[in-house]
Image (cartoon, rainbow, N blue to C red; front, side, top):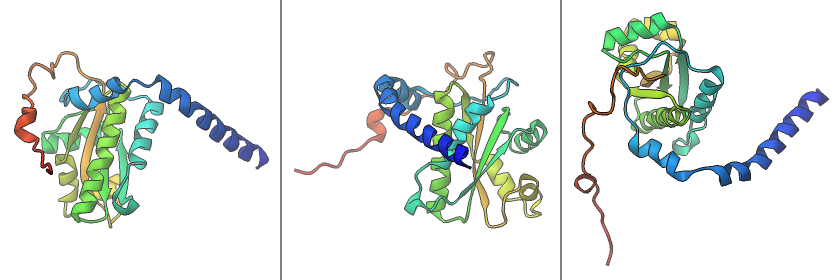
Length: 198
């Protein structure tokens, strides 16, 4: 027991000491480019996502800020290629080595927003680690609208939770160009409106 406590104290101290190092070495422009230049990926290779990377991505989801800190989600990680293919075929979705479903406690719009925030946190973490991603709602809707409850049971989603968002993670298939064929972004000035005082 003493050894476990000592290890935990050491890890906490190491994390504390590393914070200034990480802050000094971080490049804000590199992080911002993830938010402003990223593309949605439709095609993935069969290469797996590294277990350590996946854990980091999930940590980002688990620690997402939520309304009144309710943390209403259950996060389901699917790496079974047959299940991913079945859900993808049902909904005309992408197919990747990892599909993550976020389920929340109700249809309350606040909870649904929390689910979206958790998915976005994981997407940003995945892209920061060099993975291709795609956020979707269709697989979650298919699971949620299965009135037999078969999908929820198969995926271990509790009865008081409903799937709301899905995230696909993998390696981009280089044969599919997600840049030149991507739809154009809306012009900044056409969607951003400022309300200013005197």
